[in-house]
Image 1 (tube, helix red, strand yellow):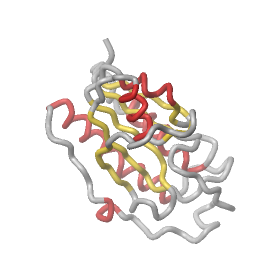
Image 2 (spheres, helix red, strand yellow):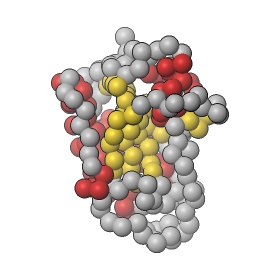
Image 3 (spheres, one colour):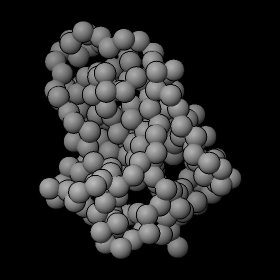
Image 4 (cartoon, rainbow, N blue to C red):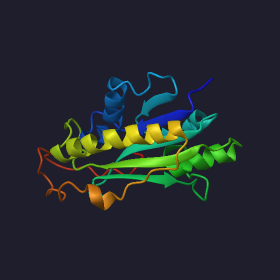
Length: 188
């Protein structure tokens, strides 16, 4: 039997702040979040149609991904609904598109949330920016609280993103990043 809770993080560890999702999973694993066997931690470079099958027999899913500078204010946790239309592509899907594919397959949809962590630098070979590290530190207890709420059967806890704004986005090239490569949500 599958664990009822799934945390599905996407990102490329070789592209600066795009590594926020996979890095968060490493920290959750180190904190023993999946030790009870009721949480599965899954990471991939990008969301694809096959991830719809990972949603089968789940109670809740949390999608985790880095966000463009200015898209969210630091860290944002919010509920998701399926996309209204089928995806036009077979890979690099958004989380709502994955939900729509699962719905199209006739799967019972789990309750779904998105955790978006604002990134600053997505350059190939760059490490996490200082701002991204700060957002990661804010995200860890939020995800732990999300899991505890799901375990207890509580209503979804959402966070107002503006309350988590750490610092304004640095100018391009700041924070140890020579250049920024535009990345849309779901790329990796």
